[in-house]
Length: 185
Image (cartoon, rainbow, N blue to C red; front, side, top):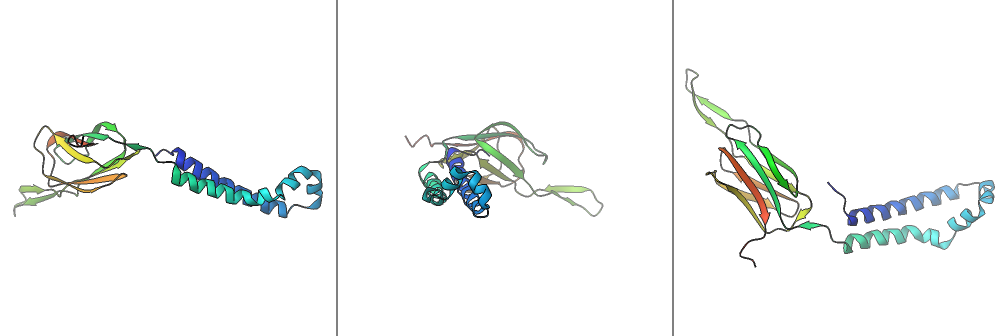
């Protein structure tokens, strides 16, 4: 995950405030000989500016958090190749996706009394997408050139999306994409 300007300014200024507070504590424990050998530093660290510096830095950090907008993408896309047999899919293309994960529970094989397999039952799959940078929430689409089980978006926000499939995906390529709706201008 990348750190944007907003995070860097905020972390830097609050870190600077912590360093100023620590330096003030060190100065109070400094003996008179050391203070006399560095009179300029001792005068600066005892000035009113130095005591106000942590407050100034925290205010700058807070304002940067409020005023600098995070980077937002208007599109994201992930192309996955499924094998139809429960193996982990392969990502062939990714844009503005930080991480993705496809989860299915273990398959259950139903057998007859002699042990001959009758059917394989697999629970629905969950596709989780994590976006980086944040995405503008518009329309999340799942597309494939072959018929795939019904799917439902369980959660979709600027940081992540969760999609549940109603069954085992066949051998296919699916595209999960976030893009502005064509009918919205």
